[in-house]
Amino acid sequence: MNSDDLGSFLRIAETMSLSAASRVTGTPKSSLSRALSRLEREIGAKLFERGAHALRLTEAGRILLIHARRVMDDLNEAAAALDGVTGQPRGVLKISAATTFAIGLVAPMLPHFLREYPDLRVHLEAENRVVDLAREDVDMAIRIGAMPDSDLIASKLGRIELWPCSSPAYLLERGRPQTPHDLADHELLGWTDQPSIWRFKDSAGCEHRIPVAVRSVIPEPAVLQVVLESGGGVGRLPAFLANPSTEKGRLVRLLPDYEAETVEVHAVYAAHRSLSSKVRVFIDALRAHMTG
Image (cartoon, rainbow, N blue to C red; front, side, top):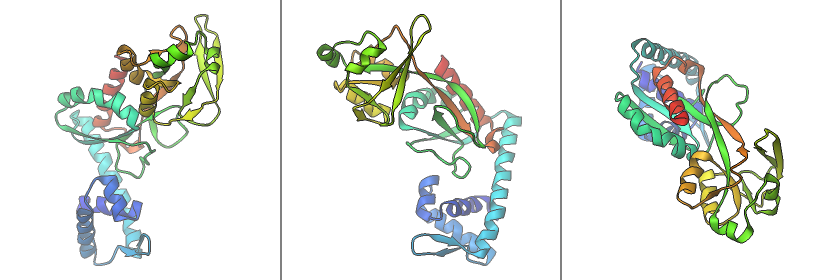
């Protein structure tokens, strides 16, 4: 039984849709359909029944699914263990990251990383959703903020400062805040419409907690950056995104004498990926890029 065909069956069974499996794996629907047909011919039974809106597993499909998961997990663990022994990361490394962080954190370090590991190919998914690492064909994900309890392994990469910023034109019209409490007099833009607190520390180490009622909600930081550069108000941006704009004079970092709030960045992966050298070397490279 071909392991590639078995993997295709597993993805179809997990999504219950050829189209969805195609999107998740990046494999054409026609290739998935041919893999399924080969398996059904080899087994001598149908694995799926087509329902009104989705596929349904047959009895043979349900039995195969149990064993397919076990086989594919064993193959992944074997490959990871061999990578750990040989020390030669190779193959495809599939990474998921939110769009802003894929652009600002991952993309800049990829050229050097790929030169250093010529036997690796990187598949970077830039998408604003939380992938299911236990079910989807993804080696690791970059996640921001506190990590909830789960069966996944989280490796801390570092912390990112959130800089309050606005455009020179906006400040010319509205004035520049001198203390965190002055922010109450400004047009504040945020990532969520939920009540939130912006935290700052002064030079004496005292924390200032500023309740924020945002006027406009812009969940994507890269979009918020454009709005701020166009004079839309005051908002917080990750330092890696804000810094180039402040250096070019498009944005001004506000309250630079106060320590800005930070968020944690983690690389997250399923337990069976933990021995994989390709995951390990990527985490090390991204951590070095963030702290370098």
